[in-house]
Image (cartoon, rainbow, N blue to C red):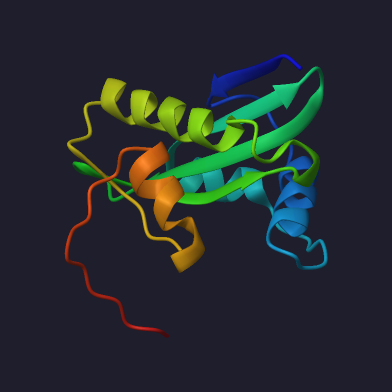
Amino acid sequence: MTIMYEWRGDVDSAAIEALHAEGFDHPPLNVDWLAQLRRHSLGWVCAREEDRLVGFVNVAWDGGVHAFILDTVVARGVRGSGIGTALVAAAVDGARAADREWLHVDFDDELESFSFESCGFKQTKAGLIAL
């Protein structure tokens, strides 16, 4: 299996939504991902096996020095093969090349090992308000 990773790769909304729906276990929605990416993202990384989108991560930003990992998702059939870690590594490289100073992530409990051990994030204090 050869996977290609591309920072700010060409992608269509339907492909991202299909992958997102599979990964986050919800029915596909009519989301204009391209409009969201263009408006709010520093960049994104696409992982492809040939022409098939098998992974995606969004790097949103605040317009300043902070960037944020969002929507990291890998297709079910290829999970556990290192694609998620490689997606985040490419996102780190893209944010670093764009001269951001901080890359933030939040995650569910079951992704703690992935975030800290596999991807190299450091634990820090943070706050959250559910809206």
